[in-house]
Image 1 (cartoon, one colour):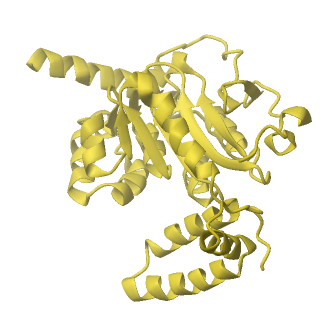
Image 2 (tube, rainbow, N blue to C red):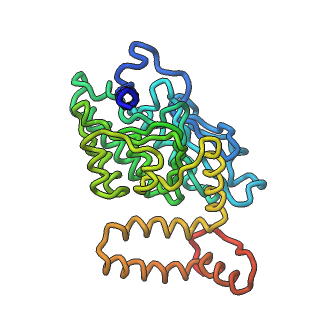
Image 3 (cartoon, one colour):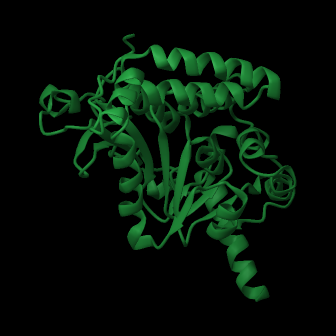
Length: 320
């Protein structure tokens, strides 16, 4: 048992600090750091190292075969460096998150990863004393921007986790609207063990987990198993590894059946009310419910229910 725990701690330390050692002295990978794919798995663009654009014929809103919109999957694509959130990786992730944001047909974004580590957190080589404070600030500010962007996007964002998520990688999972994890996944904030307390990951963890659970993770660096993460609310579902893609797509397809405009209103409202006191939250959401009824899709949904038919969504912000 003790030997097993020691191996796990070594694995966590390696995952968290790998960016400081792996690939030292080597040229940057030729592959894009993130890869943008539509549902079905076809790569349609690359982030850093790729074109960052997509042929018009492949856009979901120009594809008549896509009846309910499309799901974009952003794949963290640097497994050699354990998908560390380097400055270029963060820039690439931000670019892909914003890529189709104005498309009426975009319904869901899934964040996945190549390799056994979902994301090991920041690239510690970028945080050495050789870099100045201005550079360090740039890294953390961009990371905070990406994490808050996820919750500001008008579509749900799902983390599809199949492996280890540590430090800012754990923060990324906590920042997503939904998280589906395989049974082998683990989650940790081991920064305290190397003298860099996970203060920014604590923002997302403290809003996803009970306070004492979050603080135990932050104070000890010990990992949560997938089942523990589910029990405490860090992830939404835990499934066998061979069912992870199926379960994630099932959730995505269900979301695609709803009105994009209604979901966008609901998501924005949820994050606004969650930090307010009870009376203020009810006052604000009461107004939003009334505003929702003025939307074209708000009235279409009610009429379809009364008439016992499927609604025909406009997915627009137009009012009835």
